[in-house]
Image 1 (tube, helix red, strand yellow):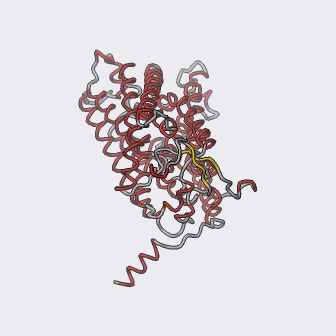
Image 2 (image 1 turned 90 degrees about the vertical axis):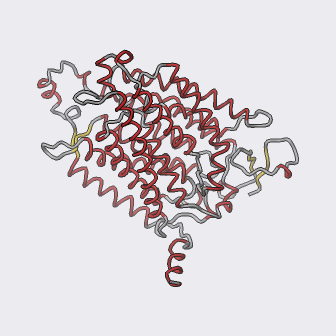
Image 3 (image 1 turned 180 degrees about the vertical axis):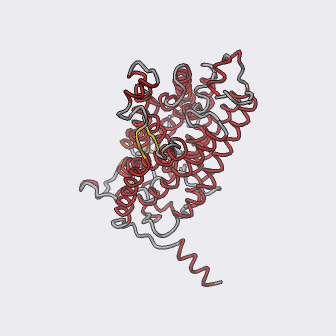
Length: 488
């Protein structure tokens, strides 16, 4: 028994070796070669991207190339792609010494994730039974970006505490879990979730939070000198916020039904985002003694309205209903940063670096609830008989709006289950002493995995300003200035 305890201790409490010279190239080369082989065996163009499109046009009596789905979807794809590679990446650059890793690792796992997602989602959604090939087009690459978004959300919870190899492993399993969860929600339950409040944000949020809980670091305070922002790092993070905020209407409407559904999704998201900005500013100011704004709230909580309206974005929630959702989410998200994040770290042992619980997990749950209520209260007087069938895909089924609302609620439970259970399993895998993760006193530092410019090798005294993430000691305050000198 004693030997067993020693073995377990050696397994989980091993000394850290951050040298990934072998493991990272091996993973990148082997997995990319595997992608090439799998794409060669399974993936082909669909009828709208294949060179036989002219013949297909004649067969389907299509008169113009403008009816190709590319011309309906590509502008939305561009916006979503920018969100994935620029918006998410720069949003995570707020840490003073982790900007290379935030943008660079975001780039790495997204580039791998979209390939694996095209395969996993293709096997579930786009497999042609006549020839056994996955047929891909512009909508498939949008959905692959959506899938990767859930992994980038999970990355936010683990930011600064994991190695690039761990992140690749997390993405491999995260994409796989997402594809199964999405298939159950969209194909088996026939729930609607155009903007992914449930499939992307709820799943990704609780997946990342559970992994962070499993990977809890009791001595993370040893890296506290780097767990904070400086002026320029918050400016870069705000650039990410603005890209996400501007393009979120495209994110929620990209795969909605052509015509009124896509149009309505963009309008509803646009309004919810605007409302969440005002309430985020209001709560941030109210929470400070002198009414000063906290940049962390502005970077994150202002986006919560877009997250919460994902499920109901194409529904007839009405313009003022969208404003109400955004209004509530701005309050809820900012409250989460002020109260829930410190509580979760102290009592639940969840170290949520980016606060994904407040930006994605909680608003995602709220979005699922809003979607279920909106679906359950739908009627022909609101949607019209054809509109009701088209939006909720009730053609050929005996479902009523009330029944559809029940299935929407069941989809929330599916997303939560996959996020929490899947996160626990993946977290245990990531705890194995194989992945080159940093020690507790070496987290949040680019120097562990990156060659830095010479003028960055030594950190001179810098101005660091306090925010709600810091543990403040009122007795130590010697002036009313909001700045202090960090001598690290």
